[in-house]
Image (cartoon, rainbow, N blue to C red; front, side):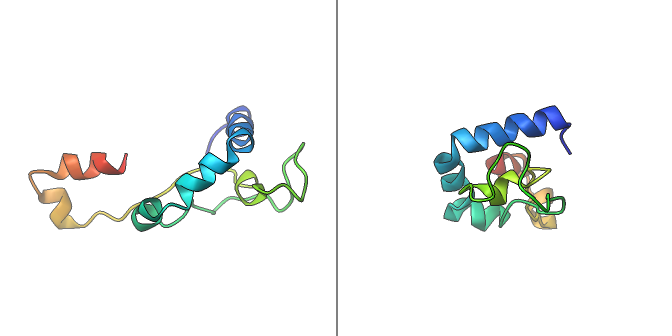
Length: 89
């Protein structure tokens, strides 16, 4: 989980680039690979400085900005595993 200063910077960038950010996390490739952002840690109220009506509030309330992707044994044991894993990055 990022430190508070880092979370603040990430939120600021999401705020400034909300349309671009949403286009990434809502894209079919992103959804197929990762599903959605992990929502384990989330604020119950808007973060300081952001309105409850902010259009990106669902993302601004996150405390961590991670995703996961399942990788099966065949992919890991394949000679091209590095290529497959790097594709996610």
